[in-house]
Image (cartoon, rainbow, N blue to C red; front, side):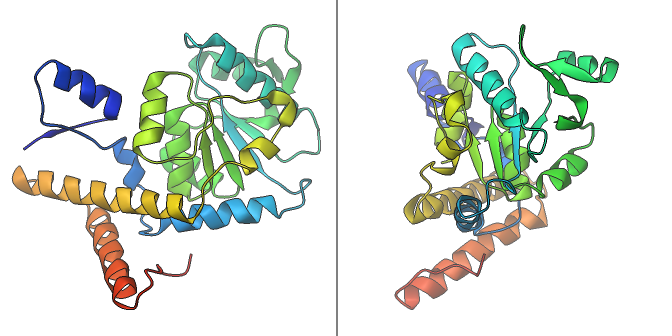
Length: 258
């Protein structure tokens, strides 16, 4: 049997060393949401967000730690500043950096970067409990992901996600898991550039097919090693096969209602 890696770049690098049984699957947290038609739900979520009054739109965002791609990080921080500038806006930044969290705990406001505007603490959130984190995100219309695990928490919550890769690790994960992503963002364009991210019916279907395929790979691997696997993973894969079989036999392929 093979072993799982995060993406094609990693798989090809390993293959170049003569190890050819690596399989690119992405992050296991891709399976945290139990829906077998999550891609369709995300697509409808994008449509709802696009049609919403901008004053009512709720956007959550995750900022990366400083990475070698300093230009991208700076743009993300400036974008966050733009989103949070309006005191009436319902947007928040989810902090995952220990340094930033400690600053928030000590102060009523925090600069997201040196020289930036002070951001009120009420606009910033951080979590020590994953279930609380996911539950909090369910109340939002869109997630802008400058960190991969923040993006995966938003997927688990079932809300539209656009990943903003700051390194090749994030890029290959987004590509492998067939997530919407943007490599060139403009802070001045605000949320609109993310609402316009491409995630059409074909992309949503490819996303759902990939999740079901990954669920089957994990099921086979766990069975091979005699390990139990979550009933939710089995159910996701079974439901996907069932509605695909019903749909194809009827000449359609429509999943359950999102």
